[in-house]
Image 1: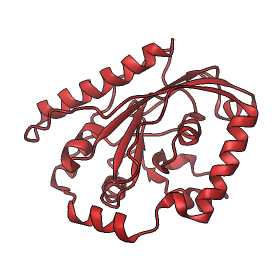
Image 2: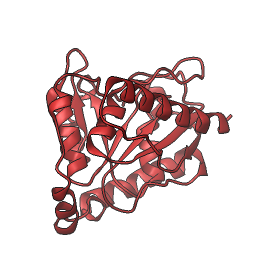
Image 3: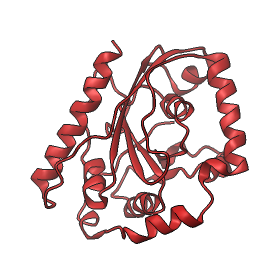
Length: 235
């Protein structure tokens, strides 16, 4: 499973999120984590990760217990989203390239609220879906590199995640992943036992000045540096 992040587009500048519905949604709707289908899938993921792979969580997940949040992470392999979900109690709504919608998986992706993204064009539908997910109090998961990293480095982050954070006021929480699954194909990462390391960090204190291209670029750099610092701790 490979994630993509939203690029800045002129459409995003006109999209806003109302603060009031967030509180209402949290108060009235069943938490995702309480849904029987999610609890069942969580147990399956726990059995698969704990029983088949070795994962060292260097620092625990620091997402808030409720309310919207954006989780950003580097991208090592297709196993990354499952590893991060295993280590977090909150359901993470991931953004994923539409071409990874394999036959027969649509029902599962709908259950876990995957947001499909068309990478061949500016996907305004995905942008709106991401903002609605935050408005509804969900955790949005994004790998801002937009592709698998190479040579053990963290690639340049796309600016869409900073734009979402600045436009919605939602907190950004960093994470980093490293392990033997790096440079393996999608099936190899899942089929063979892996040794992975995960680190989470506290909310990034972004300088939330009036929206501008310069501010978005500064916020993107701040997010990248925080994830890079976490990744260096993983060795």
